[in-house]
Image 1: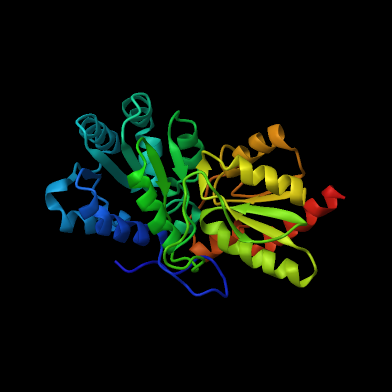
Image 2: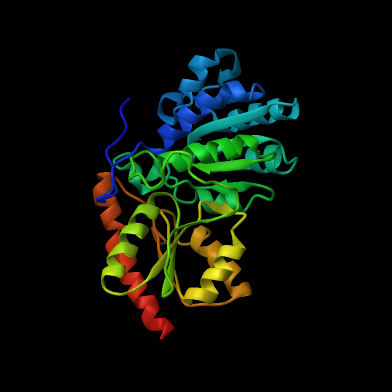
Length: 324
């Protein structure tokens, strides 16, 4: 299956979808991690775990369309000493199997890696029932889980490597559409440490996943009008990089947080909670809001829900006015 077209309008060169990058990285790293096993829910052709399965068939198990059972099987394998990876659409693996993730993985703190593919409204015509837009909130709520949202092809590869090397449960969010290239090969990636992609002193735009590209485009457009915006790729939502947030708050004094997720419980909520304690500053938010997605082209949905560089620019100007 060929990758979907990009839902993000950008002048930057188009790279592969983060789901594709994850799949190739998993396939490549499988030989270095002989303890890794993958449990599929009959969607490996979409989540790209089938590439691992073809290379390591004795370490790939398809349990059918049964996400709760999928997580239970993975938990058993992890309890037996394996590093178990499960992958499905973000909406299915986090919503359908939440009780099993809670009690079979998080509570015993097992080495299970959970990959939610096809996240956000950018999956397009599949519609609301298959759009994982509450997944970050759900996974951040589970004690002990690390939650990662890579922005492009190279950062997704690096995130996959970091995920496999980390001991304990991890949630990795991937998307369906091809996304602009933001990082060179060998992208810097440390769990819990944000990457500064654009320097600035007037405000900070904090983004992850699909929204990092528009954040950078917005920063460059703002620079042309004399506004200096810092851009943080906050690829790890949990644990959040409090040092980067504190430095940005003190040095820029205003935040815009951009994410392809519901307004409640995602990156914006985590940033707000952290910065309220550390060093309060005015904040504006770009997100899906308090509503479900709908069916439409990825491009139309990105526009409808305001996940664009133009909306980031509007929010930046609004927060600067609030900053005074």
